Image (cartoon, rainbow, N blue to C red; front, side, top):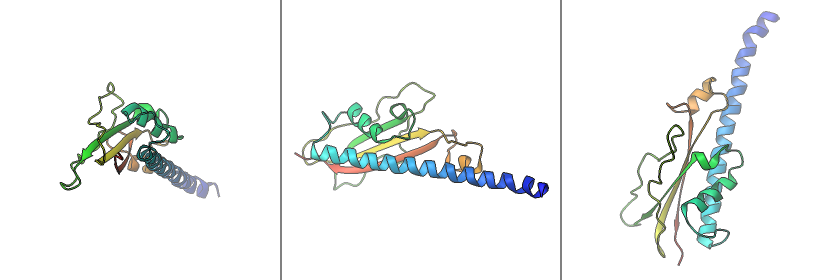
Amino acid sequence: MTVEFAIWFPLYMFFILGVIEYSMVTIQQALLDRSMDLVVRDIRLGINLEDNEHDTIKDAICDGMVVMRKCSDNLQLEMIIQDPYSGVNLPEVPDCTDRADEAKPVRNFSNGGSNELMILRACAKIDPIFPTTAMGRAVSGDDGLVTLTATTTFVQEP
């Protein structure tokens, strides 16, 4: 009985830790998506935000991210004006915050005028809970951090 326990217990633990890791990443991704949707809804309706500046939008998104530690340090926003007839000009690789460097300036963040199509993208890097498990290594990138991104579009109302 002891030999069977010694063989199977580590396998079960790795499986359980992997499920917990994947669940936490999925929850954080869903909360980032939901928070972005709620903030963009507030921008479109013109409620709950004093202005549509970078720091205000970032703080509003972080308010909805209850499980992300140090959200304002880890979240990088990018908002561009998009011509709806020319295709998407959004860079393929999101600009995420590198926590080893000093804070980077915003790549591009411009508030559009009336009836302009806007693309808002958020990118955050978070630590895996159990980085030594197989799932922790699988969900993290080369830098050992998990990258969460959310992209949404909206039309700037007059």
